[in-house]
Amino acid sequence: MPNIQEIATYAQDNAEKLGIKKFDIYGSIVDETSVQVDQGEPKQVKASNRSGVTVRVWNEDNTIGITSTTDVDHQGLELALKTAYEASFFGVKEHVPDFSPEATVPLANALDDKAPQAPVSELIERLLGAEKELLATHPAIKGVPYNGLAQRDIDRFYLNSDGALRKDSLSVSSIYLYSKTEEEGKKPRSAGAYRINRRLESLDIDGCIQETAEKTISHLHYEKIKTGKYQVVFSPEAFLSLLGAFSNLFNAQNILDKQSLSTPDDLGKQIASPLLSLYDDALHPANVGAETFDGEGTPTRQVKLIENGVLTSFLHSAGTAKRLNAQPTGNASIGAKVSVSPNFYHLFAAGDSEQELSLATAENVILIDDLHALHAGVKSLQGSFSLPFDGWLINKGERISIESATVAGDFLELLQSIIYVEKEVELTPAGVAPRIWVDGLSITGE
Image (tube, rainbow, N blue to C red):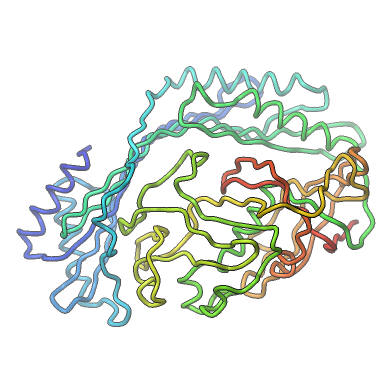
C-alpha cells in the first residue's frame, strides 16, 4: 500500500501527463480488526485493510468531474484522474464546487497518534472475559447477543494541485456489550453500553461491563405507565441521537436545498431555552476519532451553533459558505455531491440555572435512556417525532422500569421547553452532553 506522499507524487505525475491543471483528492486507509463472541466461544473474527480515494478534476471550462476508486497505485490514480476529467464535461454549470479557500492554511496540530495493534488472540480473550463477567452479574442475564471489540488504524489525507497536502493518523479501540435476560413469565429485557479510547490498554472494559449489568438488571422489574404529559429527563445519548435526527437545523446545505427547519434569516433567533448551549467541536479533547480537516481540506474547528438558546451559526462547506457569505467550518464531505455533516457535539449548560433539579428528589419523572426507530419515527422536515424508548419512571430516586412506551412531540417546542441542563457531561458516540430536563412531553403507555 503506497503512503500518502507517494500517492501525492503519483497524482501530480499523472495530472501532468494527462494535461490536467486543477484537481484534488481526498482519501483514507483503514486497517481494522474486530471480534465477536457467543456463550464462551469466538463467533466471528474480521480483519480488513480498506483504502479509497475520491478524485475531483476541473476542466478548462471550470466544470467538475468526480470519481472514486479503491486502487491507489500509479495506474489506479491515472485511470481515476482520466475518468474524472472525461466526466467533467457533463458536470453541473451552477454552483460548481471549488477548492476551499482554507485548504492550504497550516494546521495547528495534525494528528499522529498510532498505537500498536494487539493480536487477535488477545482481543478474543478480553471479550470472552467481559462476556463471562457480565453473565455472572445476575442469574437472569442469559446471554450477550450483541458484542464486539475492535481496533483500527486510520490514515486520512487531502491534497490538491495548489500544493495542499494534509494527513491525519490515529488509532481507535472500542467495545460494545448488549445483554439480554430470560425469566419465566416475564418479557426478555435488554440493555447495552459502549466505550472508546485511542489505546486498547486504556479501554474501560470494566466500566462497560458494569454499566451494561446495572442497566439490564434495573429493567427486570417493569410496570406499565399511564398515558399523559410528563416531565422527561433525556440521557446524554438519547438527547444527542434526537438532536442528530434534526441536524438539518444547522446544516447549510439542507438550508440552501430548502430541506431544513431553519432559513438563512434564523441566525440570531432564540430557538431553544437560554439554559442550553451547543457547539460542534471536532477537536474536543474527548473526541477519540478527531479529524483536523474535512473532505475539502478545510481545518476543523469549534463552531458555536447555539449560545444561550440563540442560533448563532450553521455548518458549512466551502460552497455553502460562499453562497451564504460565511466562512467554511470544516464539516464537508466530498462525493458525487459535497455534503455537510456535524463532527462532534459538545452540549452544555449555559450560565447558572435558577433551580437545581435532581433525580434523587424528583417525583413522577421519566428518564429516557435510549430512543428507538429514529429512521421511522422522525419527520425531520416537519419537526415532529414519535419514538419508542427504554427508560424508567423515577420517584425520589427509586427507578421502576417502563414496560413499553413512546415519547412524542415537536423538536423546536422541545428545545424551548428545556427547564434544566445538568452540569456533568458524559461521552457518547455523537459527542459529550449532560442529562436534559424537559417539561410537559407526551408519553403514550400501553
